[in-house]
Image (cartoon, rainbow, N blue to C red):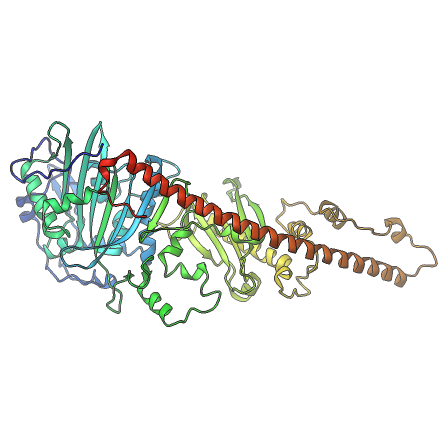
Length: 602
């Protein structure tokens, strides 16, 4: 049952039960108090630049330095490191994806949704970014690790996060400041924590180390109140900093943020969002009330420059539309989990389901003569082909998209890849820290070369199916059956693919071929000339070609009927899923009538 909130007064209802964890992000475990702040070496306070790529260009006059205490050395992390560390994210949507990865990892702890939305900073009315989930939540120790560098408690092999650095890089890439609210159940006790990571505070207060104000509460069932579990002076100092530098002016306003979290979950509010080079907010909340866009690209949309089929395709819109990007961000999502963006559910999209004439190719990566597992690659033409010039592979790692529409064919051969797209999950190579590329290892280079070969092979044997002219060098019968084409294409695979004779090929494809008796061709009658034999073969081939063409047209008509039926069934399935989610939310409200004030976006 959701406990009622009663905010304790700062002096009367605060009960300190134990010393909190470190809130100075170095190896020195000291809490924040007045003396510790005064003892920190001052730096030149400078006004904070609101443009991300220039925000780190202030001259502090100091650098991070090593200190010692009780004979043990530790390294102070300078506030400028927050900015330089965040520059690993070149793309703002990549930073949002990093934060959503934490919500996806919480599915194993019961998370059923994640929310990405716009909220307002109550102090100045500016836009802020909200990211929230209903996962297991964090206690004070987990919160401290989240706001520190290099800590990661994700031991699951399926977990996306692994370096313990994603939250800092992504949040600081999106805005100058972030406040985190989290509630969890620990040892049968309901706990909640608030932490602040503020680049604005650190630079304007003139600090030479990263300081994170943090407060923790425990719910006391006997008094039905939330009670601080910090030392009184520690609590007062940290709360004072939170109220000064966070968007909330009172403790009541601060703790009211837990009202829609429920019994467990985490809420992140990123404010003082960065501006682009034109002085406009980088994240555009105005152009589309159901989306978040990149400002410069949103303006080009208004000018009507995006008109072609290729320009409007997902491969291009994902760069400026967060909704488009999130629709393909994860390869698999459980049925009971959804992402809400600006109050609307993100419809998941698997490009592999849109492919025409798909093939599924098994690739076994080799590393030093040893197999690194096997990967099934789906490849085919986009359903919009030949009207689009898009090509490339969506490469995932542990369910997370790393390279969208990766161009493996470049240069003079690019025309032989037009419209060819593939999807694969490559868990045998490692992504970079920002999860926007892979480490350039020999395994990665081998994969790139193999995908290029797959693309060119597929094009050479299938381009005629969508109306492209096949050159003599790469000729394939344009009116052959689809099954025969797939079998014929497989003859050009790597050494592990067995060559198939044409007659066997047609037999396996289920074709009735009335070819002349082989002996009569090898030993023709004396009255039959070589020219006569060639004419007979030509007649037979023309008849067979005509029959196959008719069969191909029949199959194409059936395919259109099946596609229409599939589209109708998918539409019905989506409607049923929406109704299921709506009923699931309603059932949750009926089970918890006291949570009627909880904000639920439908």
